[in-house]
Image 1 (tube, rainbow, N blue to C red):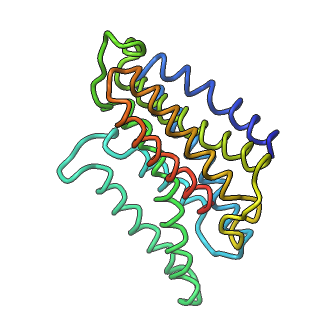
Image 2: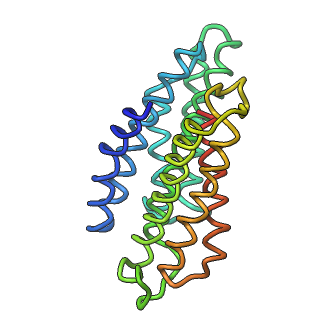
Length: 231
């Protein structure tokens, strides 16, 4: 488990840090690569669990969702328009199933996985339109885009790492064992504390309120745990 975490971090974080240094469009390119890899994994898991889907079409739709308004802003948002087109195409693919009872689940599974994975596109949006930071603050030199993406990544990493080690060392009470038997309440608590502390320090470092950073860290930690359980 720890080895897998280290490998994932070693593979994904350096390219994103390099992309952050150079800015757009490199951030969007790395995010799209991560979305593609995530979509392949998501559809692999769904197939292994016995859920019918259209993996290739779903992977393309996931990247479309991730691109969103970075493609070309249009009325009502290009992301919503492209998503609508993608959903229609997936629906047409569902009509190719000879048994209609198989078509609808395949369409629903494909759209769900594509939209869920495509939410990673928020990272590139954050890099483009992050809230302003104080240039004179300790981390203000990063700029809004770089700063907020790093805060997001480091807070999630802090939660995940602390939850793993605290749970492994002190965990005794199981947390939602029917989904993930290895998770414990102690691990969740340790992860949330780490996320709150790290986020508060980093947000203070960009000239914002540490209290706001603590609240942000709590929200990010809870979202990270929810995403982990959903996977």
